[in-house]
Image (cartoon, rainbow, N blue to C red; front, side):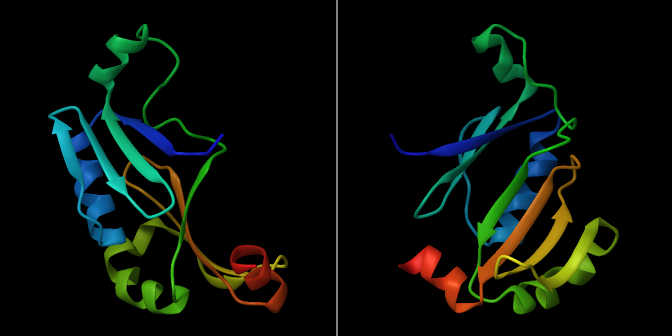
Length: 133
């Protein structure tokens, strides 16, 4: 089994999708007005409007109500990403660049729906080994 994607449900796909395109620098593929994907080499971030829930029984997901999951993107240089995005993200920044006890350098912010997003890079030998070993 391979982990393939995370799907975020939003009430405003026209706001959330450009946000992720801008902060990641990745182009989205918009399959319908209500569903798009941003693909990375290792996983996909899917973004669907609340209208997509009708195809899945209409229950379960509630937009802008995430209280526990963090969307994580591995980047080459956390500090450079922070410098590039700090002004744009101003009030959405939860934690500036910090080296975590497990060896990742991390920059944490919220998307327009309030979901936590982490840009990280392994920086200690042990963390680098975990990801590249």
